[in-house]
Image 1 (cartoon, rainbow, N blue to C red):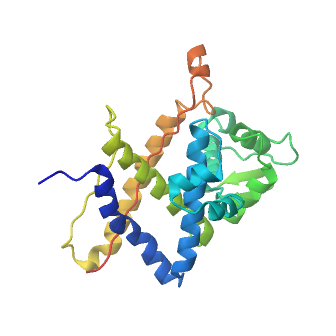
Image 2: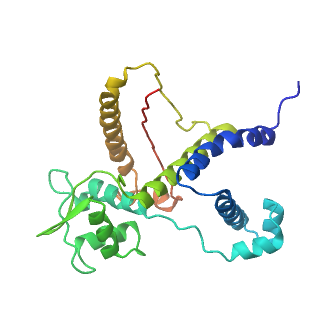
Image 3: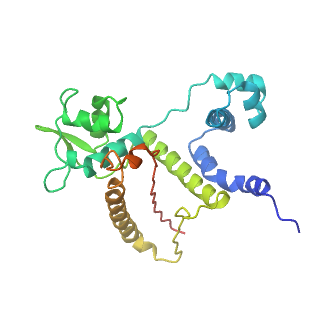
Length: 270
């Protein structure tokens, strides 16, 4: 029996890959026509991004050939605004820098309360270290709104070590989307590019635990996961150029690397 091609295998796997999206759509009463419209938009956006990455001119004809979408439809969709990008990653980077850079920590190594009045305040400098395009007042508002930081008589105080958009529907779904994309990318690279050091992709599952132990299991997952990420932040911040400017000229000039460690836990009663 002939071995299936990678394309054929991927096509057959689409049903499994799409199940989480369809389940979310059904539970939120999203109809097929809405999903199809957004699917077309994403197809066109990613095809245009791929052409740009390859140094090619983005045209409706090229995108139509790549996606199978009719050219008039492509022309309409190319005029659509980009899918909004949530600021979850920006908030996470601000928190990480605040926690791990000596510029923003006290003598005990803990995040300082930062003054944030005016563009020359300490918090403004923290935000500028992440991106000069960001408004520090907007970032401060988001941190306070999400319960990550609080207003203090001396400035802004960090309350949480990480960004968990609990109760924030838009932020939670944006985090889900980014995490899903990172997981897909990691597995795709493992399968098709065969890196010398494979991306971490591990799952641990037991299915006959007494349901009365659910909260105990969830607490253990949460505690161990938080400890792992605290260790990861300490390690990665020691290499990150925003936190620790490199000493060598080579490390100054080399392109930036994005490093992600994602974890999740889930329990359900059978």
